[in-house]
Image (cartoon, rainbow, N blue to C red):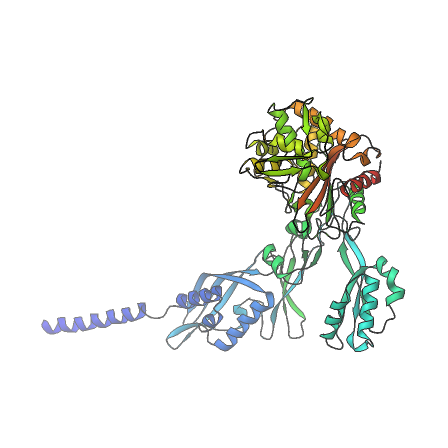
Length: 623
């Protein structure tokens, strides 16, 4: 009995040992999971180690990812089937590819083999994709859609494909570099020094670009530069606005994408794409550009297609309609064409807030029309007058003093050239821009009066336009001296030409309109102004009369005879610097349903030269 039990125990032990050995042995599922996990993690060496040919596997996996520009691959295990020492494993792959905004997804099959004591992926290119054979590679053909148009307020494209000529130099053909550079610089109105520097460091046969001109502009200088020894020329087409300065830099430009813009635009784009590099073209990149269509295929060693695998559909760009009026923009640009200093004009429609023109002079370092931050100068007397009238400190018919100077809190504030008008009506003090009068009024209003009244004119609203803009700021004055300086726009009061145009629009309309650059989409505000009707109607009526007096009998009489109806507004001189002091020049005004602001950096005094520019702008407008 004991012997039989012992024998049975031995048999049972052997069976259990065999069962344990089977259950603890290598599983094909583990090999598949490990391979797919490493592949998905980008660990190609780790994935290759799970195959029976690691060298070939790693090379094939790397080549496939590189050929398509894969940014990530996710592969998930499906059903695993095994028979004897062979098997298959289904998987679902999802590739994200640089420059495409949708994934490439497909189902594949891995071949399995039992080698010695482990399961491995039996390597072949078909393990990557069922249609990929030995000696073949994946290929991506990517095509961007045509860039959609930025449209003017009438729905007409502002940008179009334009023939251009790039003027260049081939160093080995140059006889006298210095002479060539000087001649080209003179003809093209550029600096000669960079030409010399670029050619000097270039290879003998290299094409060194000097300038790209519209074909029509090139025709004007062709006879001067075409036959110069060393000059060479390339023709092309570029997406350009109607003219070189048209609404620049607001509209921006399109070109080969930079690293900064590519990072901003996201993974749907890649190096070599034509994207907006600045202005609205950049701000609206996604909408205007659309996304690429990608055709994925298998090609042989001769780059001949052997199988089409998938088409990843892109999306077309969508046009954007602006509020800009083409004719008014042309006029604004023309009015600034001869201005040597940084200068700007913003024009908008008070009834709707639609921005009709945004012009910057060639000397402007950025879009100062929308984003500049400058002291308001005497244009801020609109706010000071509103605060004084609204609080009852004065009435429209009050008689006020206008001495040559006034001292407040130890600071002496003068009129321009210390002019003296004596006891005069408030209307005349406003029209003649009497600093001393308004400094004394500022000394009487509540400490926060300018902040509260400025908000009614949209200053500090933080308008959310598609490009950077500045709505203005008015800091709480620290005392009597600063409040008096604020009253004449010389304290901590900063505005942009856009903010000034909105201030003029508020006088015309009675409440501040929300500005808009995109048709039908008024800007929202971070700090919304008080609702319409908050600015007292009596104050509005008085300001309309006062601003008209500026033109009829004050500091802007040059505008009295312009065509198109009565003009009203306020001039401004904003001093800055101390060695010696300089002054910006402003005019903010309106004519009918048109409000506008003209700004000239360092533009002398009074309304010079802002007033003549405003006159030129209004005179040029088509009627």
